[in-house]
Length: 152
Image (cartoon, rainbow, N blue to C red; front, side):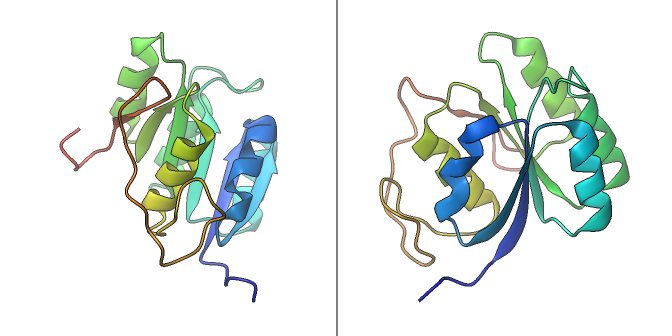
């Protein structure tokens, strides 16, 4: 039986990496540019947006900054370069929901998106709503840099 769609997620600039999220019980739309994302947001209802920091048509987090100004109700995840602390600081200042490094593992990306959307998943296997497996959050693969309201 096909899981029910529990959320609408827009992935911006993630290229093939958005495919990692296809096992979640979500409707996933993936676009390459800020201009395409703006059209999608205007035409549809999204609970969450995940985006890289430097889009080809809006660098330096400008897309996310504008999105947070006009649609603060949309949960946002940003992927920043792990070697540039200024990106993390600016992302925190605009109030994104979570900041991850671009180098984070696919499993960690999947787990972080699922957590933000309130979905329980088992990492390392196809995502199934309602099943949660403890996972290690330390290591050499990406990490959540900040999560407002969670002591981070």
